[in-house]
Length: 348
Image 1 (tube, rainbow, N blue to C red):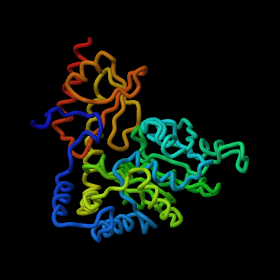
Image 2: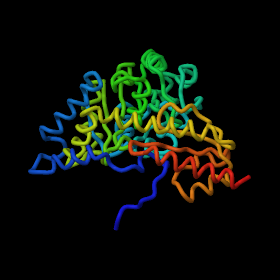
Image 3: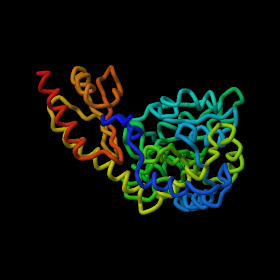
Image 4: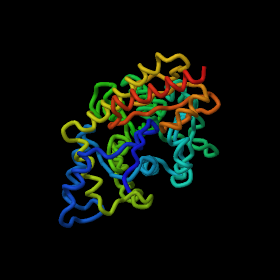
C-alpha cells in the first residue's frame, strides 16, 4: 500500500522523516555493533551532543519525549519531591499521568499567560519547606517552546533559573521544540537553554524531522549515574542504539536542526499572516515558533476538518491549533488558506 497523500497541520509529529536522517540511519546499517549504546559511534554522538550544550555532564538517548521527561525527572526527584510546571505543560496534560504513575512524581501546576511561567507565579508554590507533611518542591519544569507556541526569552530563562537555584531547586526544560525556540531567539542550543542556567532537559528530535529519538541532557554530574539505571527501568534504553544516535548525528551536521526548525517557523509565520487577514478568524496566541492558534466558527472548523487534519484545542472556546513542520510547503499553506476562505464564505 502507498502512503496516504493527505497533508495537514495537525502536528509536527505528523510529518515524514527528513531524508538526511534516513540517510544517516542507512549509513550505519552495516556490520555489527555492541548494543545498548556500548559502541564507539554512539559514544561519539553523545559527546557531540554534550558539546552542543556547552559541555554537558551526560547525554542519554531515549525513544520519545514523554519517556525522556519521565526518566530525567525521576533522576532529579526523590519520592517525596515535586515538580512545578505550567497547567498547560505536556507533563501535566498530555502524558497520560506518566510522571505520577511511572515516575511517582507529584506535579504542582500553575496557570501562566500563553503557557509561560514567571518567578511571581512560581514562588508561592515553593512553600512548607522542611514540613514532612507536605510534598517538597525539587524541580521547576518549563517547556521551550511552550505548548501554546510561545518562547521564553533568555532573560526570562535566567530569572527562572535564579529563582530555582536560590531555593535549591533544579530547572528542567521540556525541549520537544527547543530547536524552534532557539531559531526564534537566534541562538544555538546551549544559548537557548543550558547557557541560561538550565540543569536538565529533553532535546526533541521527533518533532524536528527524526524517525524517533529524544536526548536527555544533564548538566549535574550527580544525576548521570542514576540515569543509567532509570533509563533502563523506564523502558527507554534502545538495544540498537546506533540508529537513534545516527539521527542525532545528522541533526547536528550541516545545521540540519536549525534549517528544519527555521523552515517550520517560517511556514507558521506565513500561515498566520495569511489567515490573520481573513474576516472571521482571530489569532489567539503570539506566533513565536511553529504553531498558530486561532478561533474560528465551529461550523467552519467542521468543514475544514473534512479537507485537512488539525486539532481542536479548546472546543468550548472554538480555538484550534495549526502546526507547521520541516516539510510544510508554501503550497500547503496556500491551499489551506484558500480552503479556509471558502469555508468562511460558505457560512455567510
